Length: 247
Image (cartoon, rainbow, N blue to C red; front, side, top):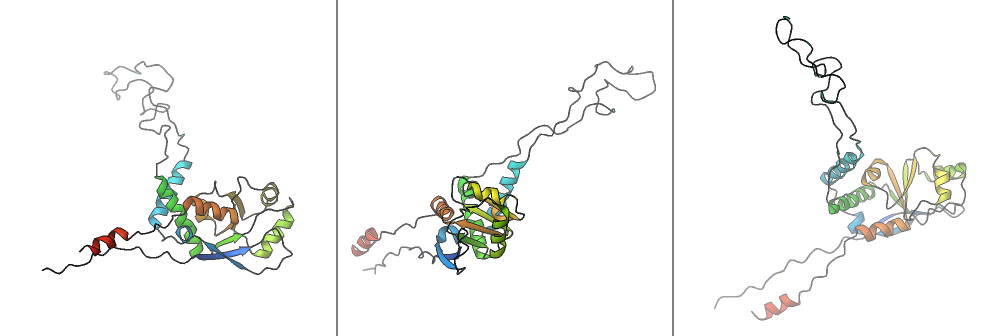
């Protein structure tokens, strides 16, 4: 009797440990500046770095920025009479048609640009993967931070500028999870150079890669984890065990 070999089912590797990031408070400057740690979803902030995906996403974004409004007139669109300039034969000079010929000064343009749409299409899942790769690259470079909140009680620029300088957050993009940027924060930060602020729904991959440092608030982290996170599927080995027991 032939010896039976039990079936083997590939079980996926366990999820990687949670990634930690920097936490600071922007609203309460009188508190101690001790750094805390926050747990991040590894499916969002610990994705393998895919340069090819980033290349596709950046090209897709930059293509959408092109106006495509360049326009030239063909010989049929240039104003003027269609009368033949001179007779075909007898003058000893080159033969010519009307004055709108592309060979003549003031004539039409041959094969010139016309208005067109330069935007390209990219699958939604590829764009989502690009966001995960961009966020993961910031974590890998240790240039991603998390704040509890980005509420700021004063609209004066000098107070916020002093706070950002004391925290060493120049060249930083602040991303909030609110529907809109808080009014006082927007008013205070708009005149500070080398600093930007946006919402988690409006940020794109190009901005994440362009800014040297990115700071999120707690709501922005929740938004990215809910919109980009991948749940781990539980493997049910009951049918396999029953099949093995019957062998």
